[in-house]
Image (cartoon, rainbow, N blue to C red; front, side, top):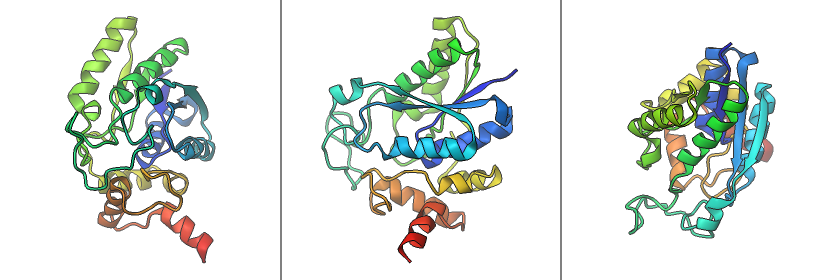
Length: 228
């Protein structure tokens, strides 16, 4: 049996990957995992829980508080999100980059999977986004997969369905696999706002993807409905 575990952030990409996984491995073989890593905006954990509920898959949240102790980024510290895309002087990356986050998430997810006889990990990382996060690149994930296999002597495979897709392609994939109802409850905004702020880079990138795909964003529509 090919069991699969989706790292579910509650965002657009991981939700798309959840529905991809259900199509690929069968609904009954898919579970989801989120991380409480000290992020400022707990709304993403609420979104992940809601998405898993709509998809009718099991969902668990693991606590990891180390990132908030390390600090130094806009997702865990009380630092304004840099909407100009200018890199921080230290890392030459946007201040929304949390060093090591995806590496740690996938390592914990692999350990979780090992204990449950799960051989497939799915993550929504993509190297086509504007940010250029190094822990979202194909070579990083390929290297990590090999390290996990060696370190656990376990046949774990990391799947990255969105790796080379742009946001409009991702929107169309979500539609193809029936994720649009769940998409209405996802969270993308770096500022943690609902309805989304519309001006941070995460919001702009999401809006651009839906516009280029010529599809309405279910999340935006949900809030417009509430306001009318």
